[in-house]
Amino acid sequence: MRRLAIVVMLVALAMLLPGPLAGASGHRPPAKHHKSKPKPKPKASALATSCTVVTQAEAGAALGQSVTTGVLGHATVEGGLACVYYGPSAPPGASPDVPSPDSVRVVLVTGTDALKWFNDYKGKVHAQAISGLGDQAYYDGYASVSVLKGNEYLRVAVAGPTGISMSAEEQLARDALPRM
Image (cartoon, rainbow, N blue to C red; front, side, top):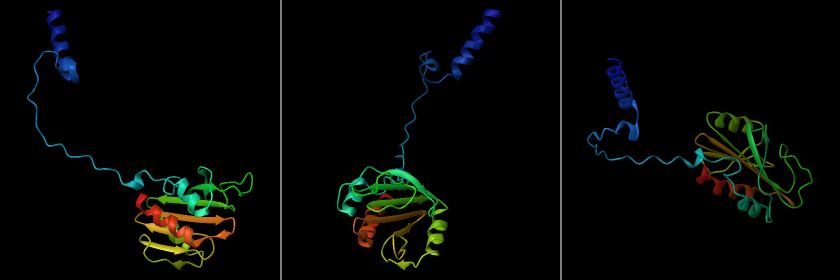
């Protein structure tokens, strides 16, 4: 009697196990033929960060010289992380937490706070609208270009050896849009 109880328990347990152990009896249920739906590809923005939305090569082209790999710092104005690419004339020991000459500073804020940060900064500067760039875009009047696309806010500042370059900032933002 005890032996029968053990066999019943083992059979019940085997039915609960997945894979080859469950099919050890040789009995397999008939295969169901369903058309498998392709998995949706994640949006580019699901993978984009401040250091991937603008590449090292693009940052170097904007400065017109080679740059370091991106260094992460705090972006207090935008509420996120800044990725800073430094040119060869950047001050030694420059902190990625503050703007620096001879650098490209990129911040990408994603999610529900993006619009809040975009509008917050816009209200603090002499914003000059830029048409045809994302859903909304503006030049802050002296140091950077800000772009809003959906629920993503990108801010790019190019501080070259000879000063700020709005055209380089705008070009970097255009190049970054497909990655957002």
